Length: 149
Image (cartoon, rainbow, N blue to C red):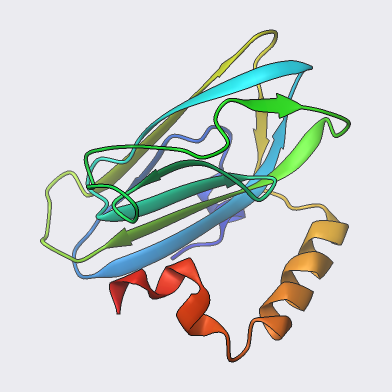
């Protein structure tokens, strides 16, 4: 898959063609106004999907529910001190080819203002992710990405 910066990501509306079994991880930063942020997600074409905002699971489908039933744990999410937070969108498709591909649409409803999407992660977040990746070695069976095995 292309790097997010090559996707020219300015919104969370993403369309990825599914020609074979695939997975994708899209990373970036969301900038919010103060207030409570309610996420409405649609993951058509994906068998399993997750949307994490600042490591809060705000939407998922297919892992802890059927692929057509979108649920979330930390939804709505209240902005506290940080105005900009990382997001991670994970998609998994088992692979029946589709003319439309795995079409992912994530809508964000907010109290005030519109969130800004950037395809760039802040340097501290990149360091944190690299450290987490090294520490997760050997613990794979406990992580959610093993759901397709």
